[in-house]
Image (cartoon, rainbow, N blue to C red; front, side, top):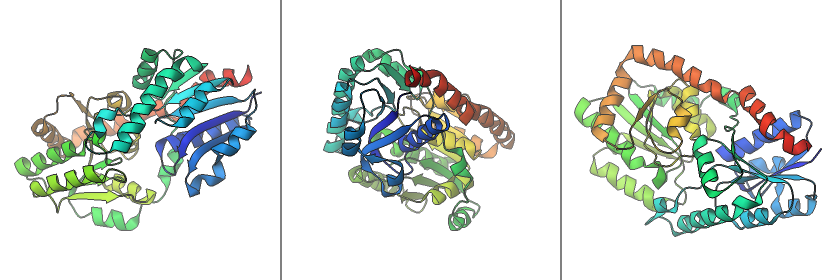
Length: 358
């Protein structure tokens, strides 16, 4: 039986791809399969789970199976493409460079590089896995072997931890809490969420706050634009940018949220939608990328023609219609069954294990 190596450029703590990588490693271990994780950049909290990429290159044997998590441009992509081992790619999507124009030359360069490398990689792999049908369609278009869709393995037990008590207290003051979780980045279109929130306050007088939870490291220019927009709309007292926060604080924001709003124009899966469902928080979104696929019929999915006034009207009803909210809790639970750990692991057995055992 082959040893399996999962390779990725950066192995971050609390990151969706890092979590997926860890979950796959646990799955393989439970199946009695020797495996390892290697990355160039490893978060200190993840060091016990992985080895440095340069060290791994010396350890990889010719008959080892290589799983490569593709989400960004990096020289490792070319290294992987040139390998003669049995290998497969797990595609998490690469954000199109157009979103970063005027904000980050570095992000433009790395995403353009990733797209070019992806095209070259297509003919070099034995199999391909995508975490959504949306991502699978991209792989198919570029000529990858027929991709298998395997959702991200969610660490559901982690969400059973106690939320930050002080944050729960502050957010439980009677105001309606409108939440978005995700890094501050142009493809997430936080300005559109702010526009919807402004309409909600202006036309319906809802006593609410908007929480934009996520780091803006590397996107300072975009964050500055958002700050100016918030000030222009006289919403400085009602919009909270959390920056990087602890997992316990994130749990507290989910626990106290009344609605989750996402206006992102590019998502390859969108883990926060699943997280919102876990906490019974109804989702309002626009139909871009894999968002509708991940929502799975729960929540409200608007068209990709954004209309802040219409979205605010819908959001108001979402906040006030208790019968609808109760019905949504049932729908969200049903939608979550697609991501049940056993369901996803069974899919991995079907898709991945034949390559390990051949």
